[in-house]
Image (cartoon, rainbow over all chains, first blue to last red; front, top):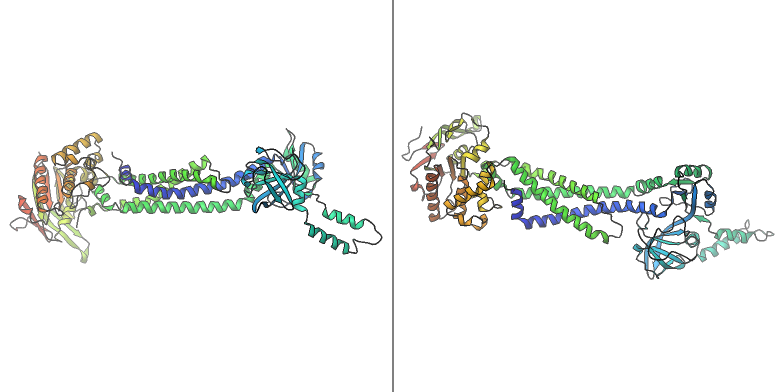
Length: 397
Length: 234
């Protein structure tokens, strides 16, 4: 038996291909939206993986350092190191800000870390690690910075000495790593005018500037300008130790909050990006409905254009299922062209997106099945129209 | 050898019920022998199309008896279950316009019917080519319908009607879009095919030019059939 659908497609292939390309671009957008969601989740996981930590210790009653602000003293890590099962503990700071290069700003997450400890950049793709205590930086390639560039963070200039990859915040901002002391200063130290103003205010306060108490005012002013806080302490546990048990110890005895890897992933994926995920899901639903409507409309219009031929086919004895099969196959064919175009388009344009777009093969397979189902469902309207054609309309009168 | 190509006795068709009831066909009788081509003429609204639809097993008559070949297909009710198969295997159709399937080439337009009947593709195409040769359009076998002239398209439509060797062909104003020469050529072909394939052909027409070419003509008026002398057929 001849494939009526195949012959019709071959006969008017340009119409099919052009329609398929239009549909394909829509499918490409849908696949890209799914890729954007996957990219956000993958960024969050990469953030946790690359930190090299098993436990995140943050301020009590907070879900820091990524989801909420957290501030703890920078000597806390010493007491944490004394806990059984802790191999390494290191301070980290995170601050999302505008980093200046020449006359342009780049939005980045500035990370303060201690070299050789959890929290340092996982691997470099160019240059070297930070070897000096101040004014050197390692940046993610997504910042666009080059080795040797001088960037400005707050009041100080930093030279880029190394480049890393896939080190981004949960919001997709690329990271810039600088030494811990510099990061604390960038995060907590006020500008010179504010310091002078604060000193004058303190000196004008009679309770803080008492006559006959030498050294008190200087001591108070010095403490006001000291930076003794960090956002979190990252802990690497000893092999064979239970992170859950260590986290319980931290919560019980140190008056701090501690999260395991699983809990932190829950915070990042289920809470922090939940709204974005819902937003993208809504887009996916709308795009699926629009795609279905377009396929239904196209197939329906194409079928209406063949009503006389369908009446003739029915009159000369063609089975209803042959006619329904023809329309269904055309819808599926359109979906197939659309999917191929969409997948190709998404693959081509994904690298140009500013944030990471992860096109997973599993999503492509699921997308293909959904497109086929949508096309099959969308063809039902046209099939109903075709099957309701009276063969008598082929005979005049 | 078949007894009849087609025979109808006392066929009537009523549309609607009660006060709005309308009798489109009233006690119609007609017999067409195998190999015979008859004309069916009548003014608009006379019941031609209704009769054609009944003969084509597209709509059910209200009462009467209808025999195609040697099989009673209607006797105050359908006697067979599968009208679709009946139309496919036992009745050929030629329309006012050829209505060829535009996305199939000439051969496949003709071969489609045997294929629908379950015959192998090769055998169906062989049969199609034989018919196209017989109708003098064999040289256009690979062409698309849009590449044919009106007369060629109508010949292909005739070949399609003959493809399953039906005992009856119903032709609904097959010469309407053609000029005189081509119209007469189509009638000549129908006569030739009727004899060659022993098929009964009923040609519904308004075309005064071709009416004299029929050996027998049925007139239909107000839902009743009359012979050439104007006598009502009972």
